[in-house]
Image 1: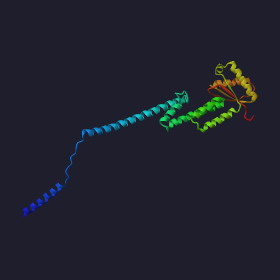
Image 2 (image 1 turned 180 degrees about the vertical axis):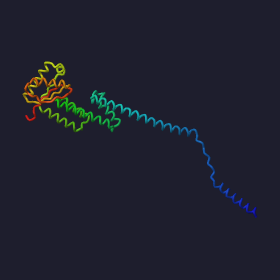
Image 3 (image 1 turned 180 degrees about the horizontal axis):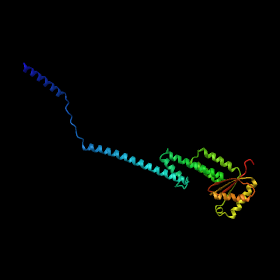
Image 4 (image 1 turned 135 degrees about the vertical axis):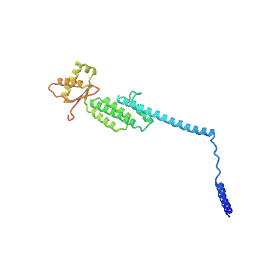
Length: 247
């Protein structure tokens, strides 16, 4: 009886084992990668790395070029090499930067600085009576940006100054440096004219000492008369006489 039960139990266990063996999938064989496949994979990775490195080098060289151009443009700007000389000026370098990077803010601001500098020079020349110089500066400003409205405003001021009929006397630099008798006679004549026309004066000279000397000579030439006007420092030696506006 016991043997019968053992045989039955053994038969059941054996049947379960056989069923389990039948349901387990046979392992699939894994084929090793061929040398050709490995070579293709390595070549693809190498090509991708080379392209990535090449792109980085191109971008690095581009940024370095832009940096050099911006630096050279700034140096030229500080030295007032705005539009000339033709091969070494701030404007040309900023334009090269914009050719690579049209939205480069530093280059755009640099061009605006050039325009503003010409407007300052034009305003200074207009005030001193150097009307031809003022017109030249405005033409250069228009070359930088012909649509800037401040150029038109400055041009209107220039035309108004030209129409005043003020007299402008350009002094010889060498005569002024020598404080010669010739320039002293010229200054005396200018002072006499200022008294006759009750005109204001604007003295411009390269140094404060020279400007004050010019005024002292003019003052001594019209002793007892109070000359009215201003003194300023500039690159040129000039005396401008302006009649009072209410006359």
